[in-house]
Amino acid sequence: MEEFIGGIEAGGTTFALSVARAADLTIVDRISIPTTASPDEILLKSAQWLKSAKNPICAIGVACFGPICLNKENVRYGQIEETPKQGWSHFDVLGFLQRQFPNIPIEIDTDVNGAALAELHYGVGKGKKMGSIAYITIGTGIGVGICIGGASHIGRSHSEAGHSQVKRHECDTFPGICPFHKDCVEGLASATALAARLSIHESALKLVPDSDRVWELVAYYIGQLCANLSLILSPESIVLGGGVSKRAVLLELVRHNFQQVINCYMQFPSDYIQVSGLKNGAGVIGSQYLAARALLNRKLLTQ
View (spheres, rainbow, N blue to C red):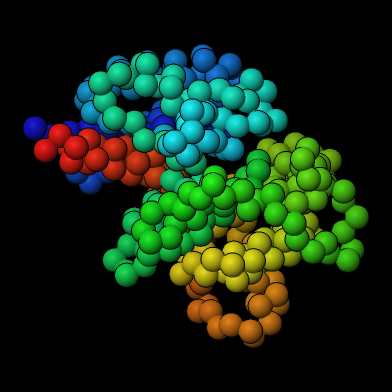
């Protein structure tokens, strides 16, 4: 009998829900829910949609925005940590879903770790002997997912490299918008920061021409982030995702700034930094990968 699994890519502005075949992660149904309501309403609507799926699901994977507690020994496991997103601080995402689906396994990770897993197994790493990757999403915020040894890296917590500090461009006087750190990478180069720099709404960023100097500033900071990740973690590839990464001129600018920081100290292939090309979205595929892993682990435990 064919098995189906459910995925929730719980992003900061949208929840992307999907149902897929467990055998090959082929998506058979999907829907998006904006995160404009309360956490309870959004999760309940998500659960109701998954319950009403034409093909009953036997596992769920959640790739969730952070910060989120991923230490399974911690009583807060599966809960959102302190966040500026209204109503979400300390919300128990995993606990809510477990109450809605008491009889099926559920696995949770960050949205960017999920995307990194998707790229490692189904994207740039597919068919290669690749065990490590870093995934940088450049959207409303900036997040970094890390896979080492074929699995997402979770130490004391998950990566929050989007909040790391970088060298300021000598001509950049923008103070930054991060409520915690002001001028961290996210505070300087996220879509929210770009909109604030240009005094426009985020939705208008697509109208900003490639010639605007703001893209050089983004690349300057993202290039440094890539260099720092390479020097500290040495992933075999770095993948850029998120809305801002789709800007055509950005990739080569990031690669150039990356090489400027490295300054020939180490050698990297020309395609070391790539833009995600996964058709269904790395986060969506990542949530399905987590669901498939939860199902497999349940089967192994019951053998």
